[in-house]
Image (cartoon, rainbow, N blue to C red; front, side):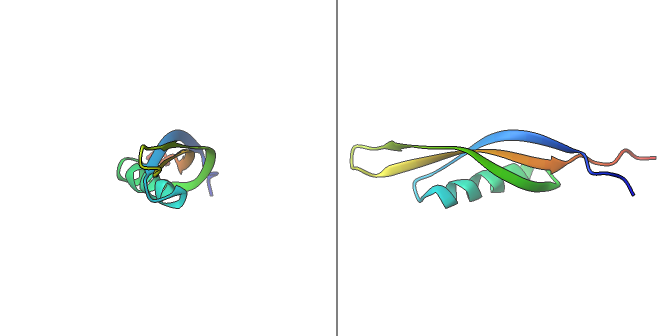
Amino acid sequence: MSDNIYSVSEIVGSSAEGIDDAIKVAIGRASKTLHNLDWFEVSDIRGRIEDDQRCHFQVKLKVGFRLDEPKT
């Protein structure tokens, strides 16, 4: 049995709906490019207040994904 080796990538998700949605949007998009996603860590939350007092949320995430095993 081999040990899992991970790579970490930093991404930013955004949403006008909320923090939870920004996380889901970021992970959903990352999963189209990266495979073997296993975990995420929120490293920063920020937002922008628009003229009509609405908020736009941004969440910086670190996502971890398992590297493929080398073919033998």
